Length: 188
Image (cartoon, rainbow, N blue to C red):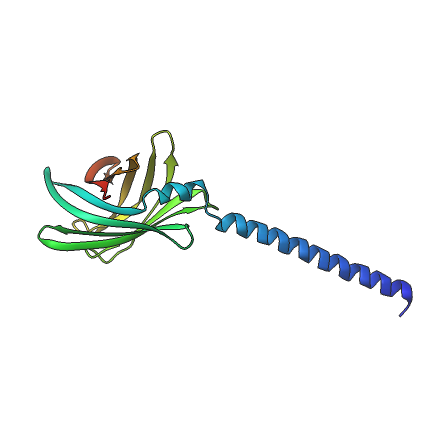
C-alpha cells in the first residue's frame, strides 16, 4: 500500500474515532441533564417526612371523614418521592403507596398510585404553578360503579412547609366533581 493511501486511511479512522468520541461526549452530556435532579425535584423533596392526614370523602352529597398517616421519602438519589399511606375507611384498613417524579425530558410531573381499595394503577401527569404553589395532575381512573374509566384531576396545594392540601376531582361530562380532600400536617 502506498504511503499516501495509508495516511488517507489513518486520517479517515482518526475522523471516525473523533466523531464517535464527540457523539459519546454529547450522549453523556444529554444523559447527565436527564438524570440530574433539579429545582422541581427539590419541590418534591419538601414533602419528605411524617404526616398526619385528615381525609374527607364526598359521595352522594355525604361527607365521610377519616384520619390517617403518611410517610414521604426521597429515593434513588433525590429523583423520586415515595409515599406510604395508612388509614381506616368505611370500617376497613386502607393502605397505599405512590411514586411522584419530575421528568426532566418531558418537563412534567408524573404520579403513580396503588392501594388495596383496587387492583389498578393510577397514573397522572401534571405541571407546577409556582405562583399558586400547586401541582395539578390529570389522568384517568376506573369507576367501579359505572365500570368505565373516568377522567380525574388531582390538585396538590403546598400551603407551607408543614401543611399541604390535596383535592381530588372526578371529571364527569366535563364537570369537576370533588371526590376527596386530604389535608396533610407535618408531624414533628
